Amino acid sequence: MTDERMALIELIEKGADADLIRDMLAFAAERLMSLEVEALTGAPAGVRSSERLTHRNGYRERAWDTRAGRIDLSIPKLRKGSYFPVFLEPRRTAEKALTAVIQEAYVHGISTRSVDDLVKAMGASGISKSQVSRLCEEIDERVNAFLSRPIEGEWPYLWIDATYLKTREAGRIVSTAVILAVGVNTDGRREVLGIATGASEAEPFWTAFLRSLADRGLRGVSLVIADDHKGLRAAAYRVFHASLQRCRVHWMRNAMAHLAPKQRPAVVAMLKTIFAQDTAEAAREQWASVADALRERCPKLTELTDRSREEVLVYMSFPREHWGQIASTNPLERLNGEIKRRADVVGIFPNDRAVIRLVGALMLEQNDEWAVSRRYMSLESLSALSDDPVRRLSAVTA
Image (tube, rainbow, N blue to C red; front, side, top):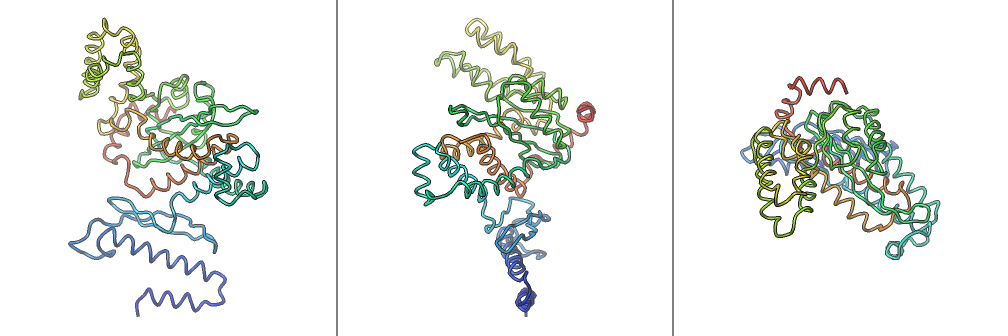
């Protein structure tokens, strides 16, 4: 008789045990994860095989909330690739949050025609305000715990970006900035560290947002990567003593706005030669050469290049292995796209709390996916940051 069968019989014999169902679910989950991981690795744990594709690499603890109660899972990690159990239903919390926001708009009478149609299609047109309130409270509890959790360790890189959603405020429809902060720690792992809504151009807002992250434990920040938001540069230095990398992609778009359509292909090719250089010194020299070549033909563009060179090339003073990731806010583009896709279903949010509810739920589940995926940056490349005495001093000062 196999060990698995003996374990199952032992559970069944606990007939009077109130925890029987939960124990059986835990047993089934463990066996299912073992089978799924075995299929991904190509061989059972501890077995040598020429068909093996990769190896296990420890476990990640996660709580699984079921109708029978909370079950503590040990989810296997892989050396190559990632694994997420099928029974955990990724995006489940986000879908509940989307439903809650739609229903909240409906019961308060401030929804659009498309939201009204959605509610009827969901069969929820008879839902009460108290029912919606309970659903919102359940999701808000999880989202608030996620957004207020302690931040541990050092985080050399911090990406910040804003996307804009429509909300109702005092009877008017206004555009609200939703700020995302994503960091990479010295273990090479990505996490969503913070979310906020507000006026993204105001320096007091940026300072308050960054200080809220610092109060939760964020430290060791060497570089903040963001668009050219007013006040963010000063706030980043004041709170973390960190440099600010202006997003290279957004900068290129700004540069194109100063050119006639016929000029753009040739000028883009010239500008790209700057970023193809192997060192910061060579890039600065090429920047000067390109600016001089364009000065007479494109005076407005060269005004931009003259005042923005250093803030666009900051990333080149960091390990070259990271350049592709820290030169722009592109790592956040997929997150913003996912937010927009869900927000388009809602149309107009009833209030800022609803925005945080939906975006927070999406980011919570994104964090779970990142936790079981491969490192975003290698430990070897990150070790160069801790070996740099200047950056190490900045982290201590911050």
